[in-house]
Image 1 (spheres, rainbow, N blue to C red):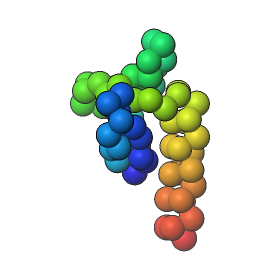
Image 2: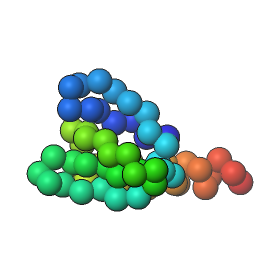
Image 3: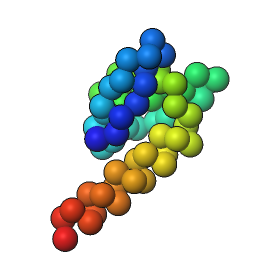
Image 4: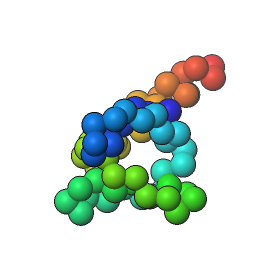
Amino acid sequence: MIELTRMNGTKITLNAELIEIVEETPDTVITLTSGKKILVKESRQDIKNLVVLYKKEMFFDEN
């Protein structure tokens, strides 16, 4: 799970496994595997970094 900020400033926790596409248009739009789209304040690169950290945590927690 990664923590992100919606455009209205509210924090959300998103299951990183559900992310299909992240676009900057110029706002950052996350498309989930369900087709739902979420607008967030974080950049595409920030989201990528959060997902990488999440994956590393998952890898080390399993061993």
